[in-house]
Structure formats: structure tokens, C-alpha cells
Image (cartoon, rainbow, N blue to C red; front, side, top):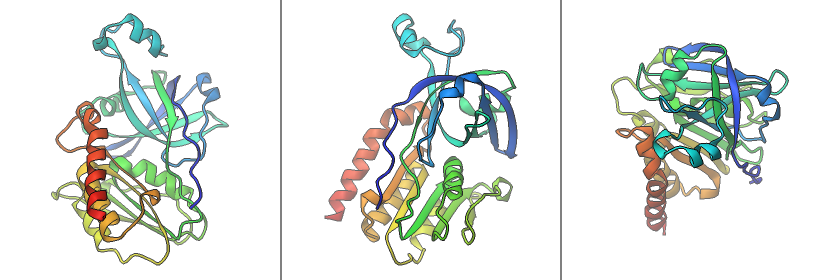
Length: 281
């Protein structure tokens, strides 16, 4: 399979809110712009992400943040908190950067910010980074995720090669959270409604019950870490999919806030990989 684009080192940048749009009852799109984005560029991924920086109340500094200076001059409790979000789209001609946020009332940090964002609001972010893009050399493509992975799946569908064979499964709370997505002719998304079931249960059932097409699969599986682990085990152990063909990790973890999950995410993923690689031998 063709090599992925080389990773970028995230850099701090500033922008301002141009407008917001309510995409679904729980999804808000924030469009950023401004002259500071003149040097912003993407390099071929469809899961490009940025890390939004939020200053704690009373921090005493303003956008755009000089992260190095802040870490030298301020105590740790006044350092900005970061939250990682997928770049939904980037228009270099108009210098407009769109980011979609899942919003559940006052829960969390970035969601409430997005719900309250007004034109002219300033923001500092790091990035972009990224690691996945659909390859024309793949025999077929598997895209799986909950609503947190929907922006990356939507961006991936838009850049699928013509004639690509794709199975895309997206789990959302109910039909009101479905979105109209753009994809090549013949490609469609299977929407799974969670209802009262645990997050990811429907996705696990869909993938394990799927009759895999012939050919080498390139898979993108992201969302809540619990179901991601189950699907990863199935793909690696039951289906024998090599790691090089997988982009797979937990964006979040049920029962943990973002900071708590980030603190253990690397160790958790490494443990899962060790366990599953040992079982595969």
C-alpha cells in the first residue's frame, strides 16, 4: 500500500471566529479565519487535527498564546488546556478553517465554547497534525466511528478515489444526528442509531457481521476506546488485518474526562497492542 504523507510538527497559530452553524442538534460547526491563517496548510491527510488552546480563567494573557513564554513565566495551573479536534475542511483561497464540535450542554470544555462562540472571538491552536488518508491502492476501505469520528469520516469520504469500494458505519444517538455527506458515486454511509444501547455496541455488531470483500482492506476506526478495542481485536485476530493497514485508536473513553483519558491513553493503547499481538502469535 502507498506510503502516507510525512507527519508535520504542530505549530502554534492564531485565528478568529468568522461564523458558526448548527449542523445537527448536538453538532456545531465553527469556521475560523483571519490573516494569521495565511501560512496554514494541509498535506494530504483526511484526519488532520488541531489542538485548540483554552486559557484558564484569570490567566492574564491573550490570544495568540506564546506557549513557550507562558510555560516559562506562569505556574502550571495557569497553562492553557488543549483539546484535539479534526479539521472538517480547509479552504486556502478564503482562508476558512471549519471544525465540528459535539456539544452536550455545559459538559466539557470545547463543546460549550463552540456553542457560545461569536464572530470575532479569538482562538489559539497547535497544528495541523494527521496520519490517515484513503489510498487508491487499497482493495477496499472500512470506515467506522461514533459521532466524535464523524468529521474525519466525512472528510475521508469526500476524498475517496473514484470507483473505491467502501463500507462506512457511523453510530449516532438517533436519526436527528445524521448528516448529508458527499462521497463518490456508489459509496454510501450506514447510519446506526444508538438509542439506549452502550456506545459502540452497534458498530461492533456491524463490523463483526460484515462479509468482507476480497482484496486488501484499509481501515479507519476511531471513537470511544472501549468499542475501538473490540473492533481492533476482531480485525487483528479474527480477520488477520496487518497493523500497517489500520488507523485505529480511541478518541475518548467512557467514564473519563478528556484530561484523564489523555493521561493514560498512550499506556492503554500500548497495553492493548501487546495483548493482541501476543494473542495473534
